[in-house]
Image (cartoon, rainbow, N blue to C red; front, side, top):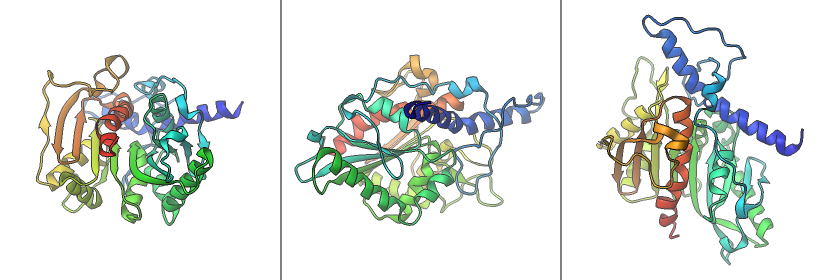
Amino acid sequence: MSGRSARQLRDALLLAASVGVVGGVLLLRRSNAPGASPAPPAASAPVEPSPLPRGGEPERVALDEHEAQAGCDFADQGFGAYERWRPLPLGRLLVPPARAIREDGGYDLLVHFHGAEPVRKQLAPRDIELVIAGVDLGTRSSEYARALEGGGWDALLQAIDREVASAVGVAGARAHRLALSSWSAGSGAIGRIIERGSHPIDALILLDSLYGSYMPGHTSLVQGQLAPYVALAGAAARGAPLFYLTHSETPTSGYASTREAATFLLSELGASPVAVNASGDGHPSGASGPGEAGDALRLTRMYDGGSLYVRGYAGAGPGGHCAQLRLLPAILAEHVLPAFGR
């Protein structure tokens, strides 16, 4: 098997494993419902579930192959002007043409955690002139958290600077503006980065990626939880760096879902989302339409305040979870790039 084929197989397996927890939770709930028949034994080995916040209990349930593919098929239109992935000690990098790098070596950087290939397939054909780093480290949020402990985050940024400088021949290349994004388990990395606070973040995008662990004896989030995210959301609401949070309707078992986490975050700010009826904007401009995501990207609720944006979508299950990745191009074009002065 060629190196490229091996990487493609790895990416496909990673994406399928990432939706494994979603299918597992849904199957578990169906099997535990009153009057439900026991789920048949899985034909294959259990998939390690993802994403899990710290403190969450895993559900080791295999995902049906058809469910794993639902909503997770992203058309590949090549690399555009980016040409190819460039390896990093942690992850890989897409470098735009030299015109995107300023004379002083400054550039705009997007670092995305979990789902590098879907991000590449959607962004590379577009002329957005961002340096794009994609990091895939497994199917558990804890794997991302461990990799960013200590000096892992600083080392990654330094490696990106060196690779950009080498690729475009500009000495002293450095990230001028920084956007972070994550999907699913990638939030494990985001939590570590926020905790360190060693580099200013100009934009944060969480695509169905903010979960929460229940405190012992509780079945809901309690005041004081998700404090770093609440602080960032509060700053964004006052007009500070952009924070864009999305969630699906995908249920979880034993820990707070992305919908619960989004509701809790807003409540900590004394805010609440506005419901969007069926005749409202079902698909954000630039996002995939019904042919690719079906009802998964039908907008159900929203909140706008300063630079804080919260969006809830109707999708549930593996397809609805994967569909959240399709929102990234529109979020970048309509919010992040204008905030960057582009």
